[in-house]
Length: 175
Image 1 (cartoon, rainbow, N blue to C red):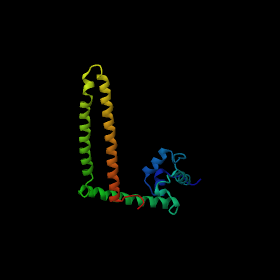
Image 2 (image 1 turned 60 degrees about the vertical axis):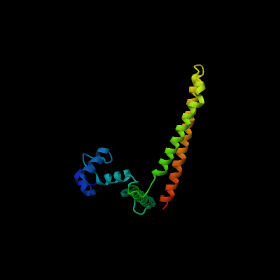
Image 3 (image 1 turned 135 degrees about the vertical axis):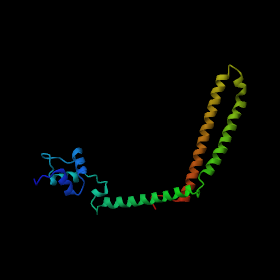
């Protein structure tokens, strides 16, 4: 075993701050011997406990480093394209809401008309106290069906708009 160093001396030896070394000691990642650090042992402990996902802890020419750099470049390219699109949306170059708002207005009108038609359809059952509970159940079921159909129509509309936007933007990780 070589010479033991204080935390400050070991920090200078590693080229890091004393606070960083103190944190490693508190985390138990570096063990102390008589309150001091054995540099060879501490170096080995740090190396064994290093997170390989962090670029500083990977060998420069390893396959994982190369794959990480490729993935990082793809992500940066994607992020750049998305920020450009966000700027264009803010500048008003994209009219994303117009078709959806129009669809929502028309769908709302259809739903309103369908619900109002229920009143006429079940009026004869609702007026009779004996058949009123049955009429209420039937009306609720039909309202639920109207809602479910409306939800499906909205999902189709959003899906169509998303596909249209994707074609216009042509953004993917594969670029």
